[in-house]
Image (cartoon, rainbow, N blue to C red; front, side):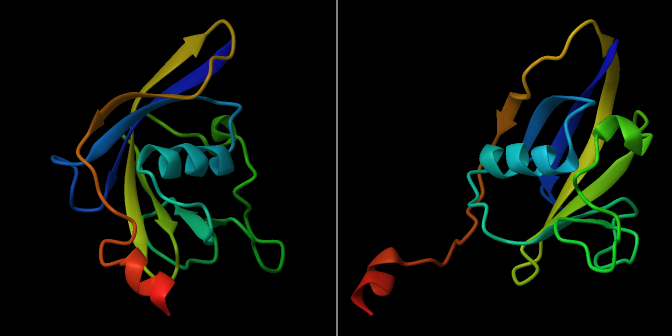
Amino acid sequence: MEKQYLMKVYPAGRGREVYRNIEICGDSTLDELCQIILEAFDFTDEHLYEFCMDNRMHREYNYQSYPEDGGPSTDIALAKLGLCKGQKFSLHYDFGDDWMFTITVSKISEIQEKTETCIIKSKGNIQQYPNWDEEEWENE
């Protein structure tokens, strides 16, 4: 039996107007969860990130994309994290812009076989670079 998680993901403070509901299997890693979150919100994948299990940035025990000194890595399966229904944690993406995505474990199910990670509900949009002016960039 495999675990499957239903997670609601939203930019911090925007949970009512902008969110994604994602189904993901327990053998998927935090790296894969980050990838689907970035895809779901149409963000580029070009920055460091960490998962903050206590919702606080830059902690020694956060799961980091490139950990220093052998710290916890995002290359860990979700099923090994001991997640429970109702648990909240955060994805801190792009340490310069400090995007924070709140993740709530809405449901945990037992399934017979692995399924593809998918976005099952989507509401609203945000822009990764809202003040980005491509014409200005091209003219420089």
